[in-house]
Amino acid sequence: MRKKIVRNEAEWRQQLTPEQYRVTRERGTEPPFSGNYRVSDEHGIYHCVCCNAPLFENEHKFDAGCGWPSFDRPLGEHHVEERQDGSLGMQRTEVVCAHCEAHLGHVFPDGPPDTTGLRYCINSVAIDFHAGE
Image (cartoon, rainbow, N blue to C red):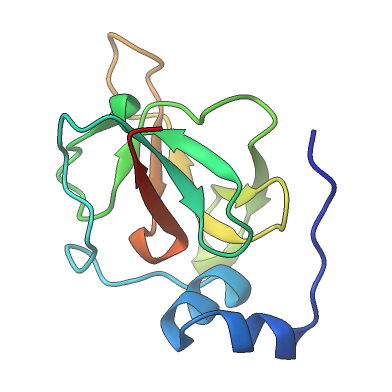
């Protein structure tokens, strides 16, 4: 398991775009259907934009029609952490990078029933695709 990455606010702001900072460090959400990642057959891995940790495999991505990249599972059990999120007057499960605690999105129990049944709904500005990995 990787060592936790800790940076101060100024360091994160210098490294990230304003939108990446708002989403990953301030627990924001990008508008639906605004992201870069569409479902494709290309082999590769999505990494955290904050710390470059590998998070999700492209082969586990699916089109949920929700407007955000959706995966049925993370790369492994130690790549993301799940936390209870009571913001916005509802109970949800937040997904964060296990290495730098970047907010990635949320996980919901309405994913493909033929796989895990989970939908990891991830902000595209929080991930970076590395083809061929």
